[in-house]
Length: 109
Length: 83
Image 1 (cartoon, one colour):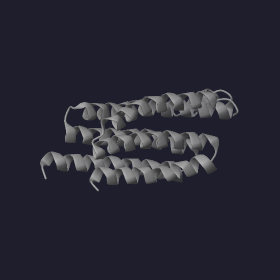
Image 2 (cartoon, rainbow over the protein chains, first blue to last red; image 1 turned 90 degrees about the vertical axis):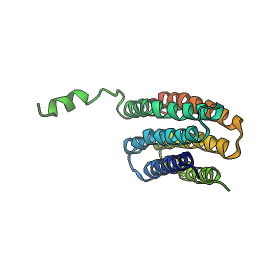
Image 3 (cartoon, chains in turn green, blue; image 1 turned 180 degrees about the horizontal axis):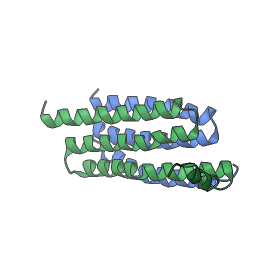
Image 4 (cartoon, chains in turn cyan, purple; image 1 turned 30 degrees about the vertical axis):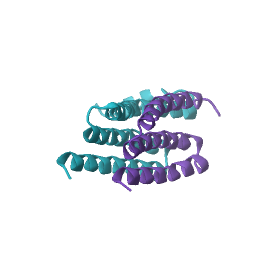
């Protein structure tokens, strides 16, 4: 068993564990905004798994594509969370800006 | 069975709670669960590709990663209204 093999297995276990935490979070939380916190986390699990494949295979066709898919999900996870939260706020309030000014006035300066 | 196949089984089992949330929770919660489930499916394809040494699986993972983000954004945009 080489050092690269150990690192790849460690990254794989860590990535899968992060995704399991994301699944538990999205299942157990009550509010949709609480659930959305875990969507971005799942993307970072995919990035760790992609890095694991890259360590194992090197910069090959499988390694490059695995890293690209993981990095894409990690990069666009927060974008997806923002777009979904904004959409849900619009769905609930009619306009996502409703209450924002009032919230700013309530903040201590 | 190697560690990659074991990871694929764990990730596929993790899809079950996401499907349950999609089936039984509100539409907004279902969208969040769908987004996590699509990430899980992409990761499963990556892991299967390495486990079986089959490159087409990782091609599927790349396509699924891009299309799942685009699809989820479309769902989020459509759900601003009442559907």
